[in-house]
Image (cartoon, rainbow, N blue to C red; front, top):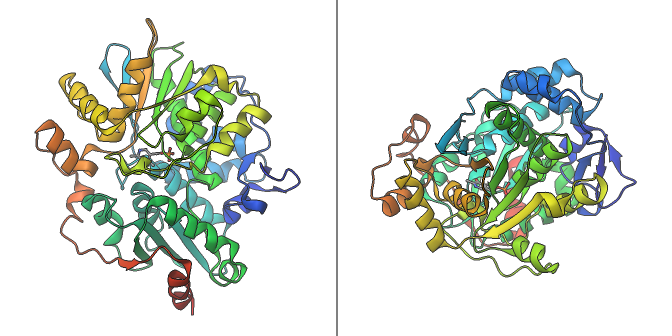
Length: 425
Ligand SMILES: *Cc1c(COP(=O)(O)O)cnc(C)c1O
């Protein structure tokens, strides 16, 4: 069962939580039981998809047949997850080998599997807000799926041209809107749509945002994969470039399941609400500022209540396990150059994660930084900062010359509402 962290009395099955997306009172779902796995060594020995199915079954409970989860995990996780040593004791976990070239493929593809299986046959519209990478992952995961409409909102001018090409050129069942506002404004419109019962029912609205429990749980799996590829007995420090804090939440769930992790570092850009909160206990979001790590331009991270719930309700020792630091654009550029000098080309988000890691890593510790996007996805920035040419992988080369099909809209639900309903009629 899943429970609503704002309203304990709401308990729903995993399929129901995936369909609902968000619970009563805008509360997020978490698994009721997140308990230590006893046979960790055996688990770590298994191949990725098989191990992932076991981890997911453990979190989901008996409501979904293990065979079904097994099939879903195999279908969703169909690309490699290499762990690359870039310096002694410092590893890059490359999460960008899926179709949209960012780690969001894990969650989006698993969620598409879930909805394909759990859907009751009525209308279904996936309405999602993106700061760049979610849109591509979700659009590609659901593109062409019969009976599903996809609507993606993104902040106009704040995603890179290549990011935009990956989800705004598809057409078919995917519609994209460039919103004249920041990501928080897009996210607010999605929240508002979900408060509109008429819309929810007529369209069968589902948000594929990182608040969806299917996406979150899918992301737990690659933390196990990272540890499985390290020398036996290693207890790594993970550094996670963070925006909405879904990725960090998934890592903390892995810790609660007993994965050996020394600590997690949530690395943010100048949007530093969480590092300030962990330092002084004040939740005091500033207006969102635009940075070169645009997928993390979020000042009110949606998933943070889950982090707190893991501490309060599931015994995760946040004081011990979680640190958070903020790096600005100048520091991000320096870290890209320093990492390049060490022989590794990373996108700005991943380089920021690397810097936070090496700044915090103590003598004798092993560190893993999550590479959240392929460098080609941020080609302009990487080429400008490093002065090298970045080749486009196949999936990007295919869309680079296609026209963007998005419509521009003000950050106003009244403008979006008729357009949403139009497609349903
Ligand atoms: C989404 C994203 C992030 C932030 O992940 P959260 O789970 O929202 O914290 C970091 N880097 C890249 C490239 C992303 O696409």
